[in-house]
Image (tube, rainbow, N blue to C red; front, side, top):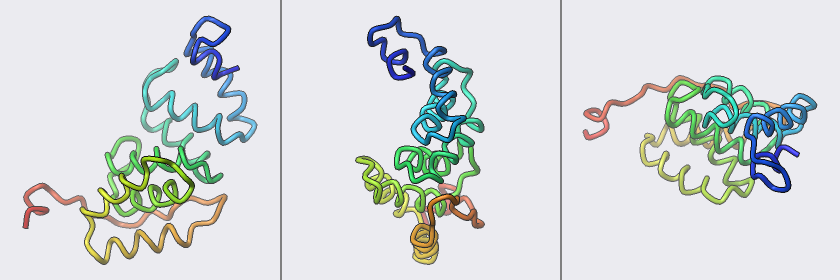
Length: 152
């Protein structure tokens, strides 16, 4: 029903109603519902925009191996919205999303890799290869590089 309200299929389009139905599924542990709630908070559709709440819902779905939530979480870490900017963790989540079949995640992962040192890339790859369903990627220290630092 949430998708029907979100798209206006057979009912009047109503983002708040869609979120209400997504939340019912999400609270029962449904990864797709959790991802949809995360999306709603990320983009302010039917709820007030809140990157931190989006991240909480993306984490719940991503830990269940939802490639779309893994990608969204990777983008949050890449952009520093809803999570502290951390390109190592971003790479790891995007790598999992790509392995899970998300159509954009591979290219986004590769773009992140261009901004990592060889050591950071190796760590990011280790994090994603050691990940198990039901867990989150371990957060590791990452020093955000300024534009001036990255040009050297």
